Image 1 (cartoon, one colour):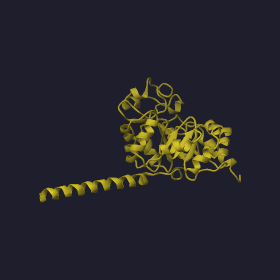
Image 2 (tube, rainbow, N blue to C red):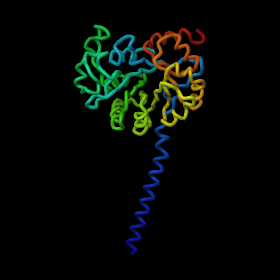
Image 3 (cartoon, rainbow, N blue to C red):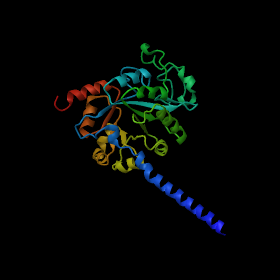
Length: 294
C-alpha cells in the first residue's frame, strides 16, 4: 500500500512538472518569436517621407527576372530589399520563378511544378531577355540565399501558391543553412501558407499580400501575426485611414509594383513604407532628387 502511494505520488509530481513546463513554453515561445515591423523595415514612414526600395524579381531592368544576374544587379544597387519568387518543383526543390508555366521566360514548356529540379536546370532562362544572357539558368532557393548571405541587403521572398507545413519547412531549412534569418522576410497571398508559416516559423517575419484593403486592416494583420501588408497603390488610395491605422498598431504597408513617378509620389504622400519596383535605380534617383532639402 505504501509502495503504491509512493508510485502514485511520483506520477502526480511528474504530471505537475510536465504541465508547468508546457505552460512556460506557451508563455515564452510567442515572446521569443515575436518580430516587429520596425526591426524589419526601420522606422515606419510618415506621409511625405521616402519609402524603402525593393527590386522586383531582382533588378529586371538590367537582367532577366529571378535569375542570378538580376539578383546580383539588385544586391549591388542602392535598394534596401531584393524581392523574388519561389515555388516547388515536382521533386520538392524550391526554385526562383514567378509564372505558373515556363514558356514566357525559358526554353521549356508546361508547369514548373510538373518538372524536376534537374530538368529545370537544363533550361535557358536568359535568351528571351537578351542574347547577352543566353544560357542563364533558373536558380534554386539555396543559390539565391547564398548570394543574400554574402550581402548586407534583405530579401523579400514570395511563396507562390499554397504551401503545406512540410513544404514550408524546406524553405526554413534553407534559410537556416545559409544563416539568413535576419535578412529574409517571407510573403504570400495564400492564407494556407500564412497559417503554416506562423505555425512552423513564427520568428521569421511575414508579409500578407492582398489585392484590396479592408476598412479595418489591423485585426486581419494581427490574426496572422504579420509585420506588414503588401497591396496596390489603388487599394491604399481607396482605403482612407488604412496607413494610419496600421502604423498605430506597429504594422508596415508596402505597395507593388510601381514604376512611374506619379505612382511613387502618390504613395509617398500617403506614408507607405516600401515600394516594390521594376526600376529600382530610377526610383532611388527620384527619391534623392525630390526629398526635402534638395
